[in-house]
Image 1: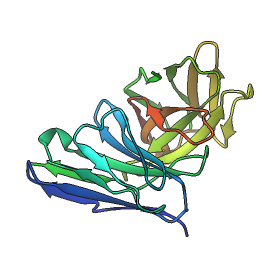
Image 2: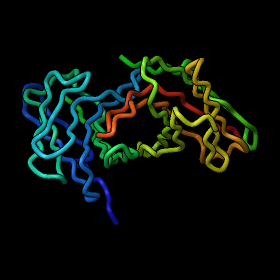
Image 3: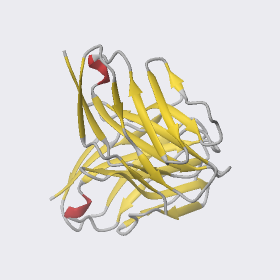
Image 4: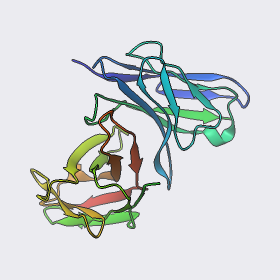
Length: 111
Length: 116
């Protein structure tokens, strides 16, 4: 069955380290998204992509980057992790104007 | 910019009763979509129901229905015959009606407790 996966599911890192969170979908969706979830804020958009080689900043993109080299993957990189980036991260994908489907989430702790 | 507001951080309901979760949004667009997502303790985001703004008829999915008031920019979720498995965080979300598929704007969420 087609699915969207995230890895790792849990990650603990130290301030200043570079961290990459993986997102992989097998639906052949053209759209992919990264959100972070914090208490009291719901989910907020970090970056998104509408296709290969296309990336766009969301509302909370500072300190994060993405690249889209193929349809299936949109890795999220924290260039220099900060304690304020401790959060739960969700990847999502959709085809055209269709419904977004979410991955299981990654809990990141920055010490 | 579009905003979505859920004014009820927490709600509770007795099993088998009905509960309504509120959501308001602000937009200048005429073409858009509204969604309710459920997030149980597993953290998985699950689509509950979807409403197209151009449709006057309120969407329904089994025990879940919405009251979409376009002029008032209100989009409430009604859960009938509440079950213990309905206990979760519920998020209201907005999306513009772009053909290329646009990002979601979420409300802060409402934590629903179902009491036996």
